[in-house]
Amino acid sequence: MLVDRFLDDAIEIDVDALCDATGEVFIGGVMEHIEEAGIHSGDSSCALPPITLAGSHIAQVRRYTEEIARGVGVRGLLNVQYALKDDTLYVLEANPRASRTVPFVSKATAVPLAKAASRIMLGATIADLRVEGLLPASGDGGEMPDGAPIAVKEAVLPFKRFRTPAGKGVDNLLGPEMKSTGEVMGIDVGFGQAFAKSQAAAYGSLPTAGRILVTVANRDKRAMVFPVKRLADLGFEIVATAGTGEVLRRYGIAVSVVPKHFEVSLGDAVSLIAAGEVALVINTPQGSGASARSDGYEIRSAAVTADIPCITTVPGVTAAVMGIEALIRGTCRYARCRSSTRHCGKTRELRARPGGAVSDRRR
Image (cartoon, rainbow, N blue to C red; front, side, top):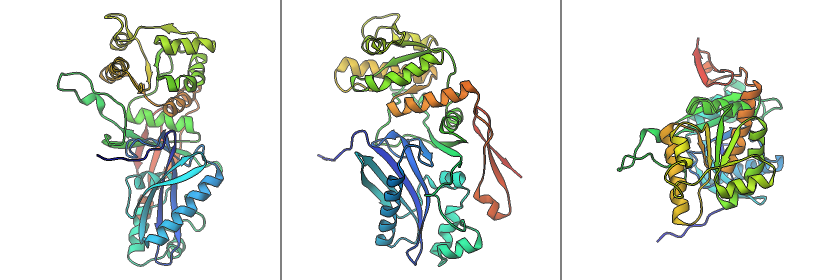
């Protein structure tokens, strides 16, 4: 039996850094996960620079990272994962190696971290690399300038390609075991625009009109009110199961109630999804009750089968609302970042299409 400790409702933070033989540390980037801590970092979407972290928290992250890097004696890359809960910063794990986020950080900041790490492992110092121009002459990724574009990393999760032994769609719930098979990046001047582009690159564009099905756990009902109210204000039709609909109506949101899957055989939430009458599903997992858990699975797997976006966390809903609003307002625009290939005699640009995915242009 394995007994482990968990943090509920914590913000997870990822840091990639360099450390040389003199003990100098260069922060490559500080990433704030959109999903709460507990979901595998390879499956989580994240934003760089952080969007909700206070300056004091970022300074604390820097201090802890520097102490760990020097204490371990790292020469090259280091990745540290943190969780922030009730103003307390916890170290989840520290890895003296390159992490899967290094390519994302390098693209977002235009700093070739892997190349710099290789040089450091061969004896160069961070000061040497600053003089050469391989690293910025001053500052680092922990001090992003005002007006810097927001980059969002999204995991590619191929749930729709899989089936259960019975031939049904699989559940898209995320957890501590990694399920993703790739990653994409969206970049723009604001978080909403960047998130919308990341979703377009991974799964197809977020909806800008239509019907949204909302059915969430009791613990999430209150937190869901204002995001759903914003979606209703943007013109979406809201349908919900009875318990969720009752709470939304108390706050003045127009809601049509639809039965759960186990309550009726026809005209239920799953039937709406299968018929293509829903543009977006919001479903957070229920904590107890066999019928509730079964109903949530049926809803989520139906969304996967129908290739309909299905969001399963409260932070994910908030991010999606910001992305949808950016698409409706038409504020997604071109944003560029030059990757580290410019240091190899080439130039490579990432160009994010308005409301679309990131494209790769070489010249």
